[in-house]
Length: 610
Image (cartoon, rainbow, N blue to C red; front, side, top):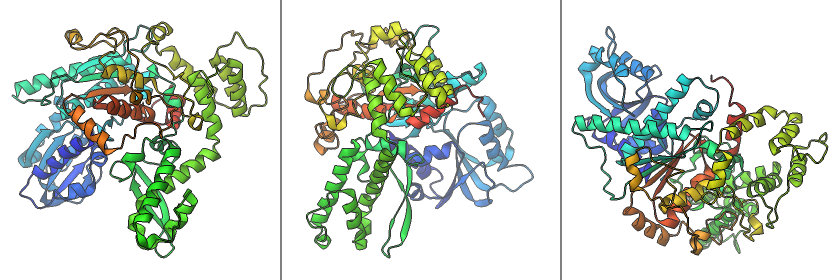
């Protein structure tokens, strides 16, 4: 569990540092505070003696009798602010300083510390914690670098691109150190002039791991403590390998909420009726700390509604005082009325009222934005067939898109000589989106070349073409190609020619199998999207989790990283494959993507960075 592991490292830092002090101050910067807040709760830090969390970038009141734990990124600005707290000629802000960096600082960054005598006199601890990533979930991480898409795929200067490459590699290396694994690094191979971002980042990561390993050996420090006999594989791909998945609306609970609602990270504000009938606003966390969230986050929204209603009815039946809900509630409106009728149970029913609120708002947005019509065409185009399994023709696509764009000026004609991009540009000009689609077209030009796509089609399905027969979820037929890639990787069938190792000596340690055997078990067949989650194995069942834990305990984790951002559908695919094939898979990206976020990023692709 990556989130628990990261939280343990941070809590141990707070607990063991100046343990003889009853209370201490934790000083963070803008980046490191995100690392802490994503992995830990404030109460967990308070229990270990942290009385206050302060921002090093802001002016603070001196506390000359307290010890301060500085948890900082090794940036020039953070180090300068650290030194300014112990500036000559001024009283020091704290009695002692215990400095922890999120990653290895450079000699240039350390120079101001070496020159700050007052700080050196009070410096009691100086360590590198190696946690410069966000542990979003038990199997999901982010580097919190939304600007990486612009820098790596836009028209940024070479200096900016090189700096971003090193920043990404550095943060990925801290993840490896936290996990205690020295992985085999692999990447998606391409040929010029197509994007080589995956290879560039992979080689930078290998160099950084070598550098850290040599530094550790010279100091007689052991970095790699994972005892698994099978080495971890760290696979790096980039967003240009699949530009389609981030554009599609996903209708599982977590993805839909992130796409349609105002959620900051995992913080969500909602209001409900209090005991006196007054409206109460509350901020909650939509993450695994919520008792229902782990069980429903990957469910289709229809199954989520059914699950929440069933859970509420079960609660009502087990509490005799809630006998007013006769026969149980059958829809969200009835559930809302039932909750308002029992204010004395507000703590117990709070978890239900939260998810009722999220689901109702998601469905309201779904209807207001006519997402069913939009998603139908998204699925038809991405899967190359309609819900009945019939091939989708270009004329029907352009007709459907014209209707969605409400563009009355477009004449339907036989444009056999035009590409789909040309036709989209024609439609988009009237809607002022030509710039967006032109940028998307420029990304397509550097994406996986057609020849490579053709040779890899038997390995990677760029859209599910299987007829599922589940009409209820015909807007959820597509499955991201990364899912097939994860299955291949887990089965040691990922072709070494298309996904080589950075270190040639590692090639012998990975399988070079070329033909992927067809999945035969019903559990693996259930991976295909479009199948109702009612008919899939319930991944939250206790028995499955126990068996999963036994299987994954004896194998090293697999790590997959997407330069340019990872989607919620890809995150869900990683959980599916991990649970189905019994291998822990960690998935991450430079950022977490929703359709809106990705479209905005494409719109600004060639703009100047602020």
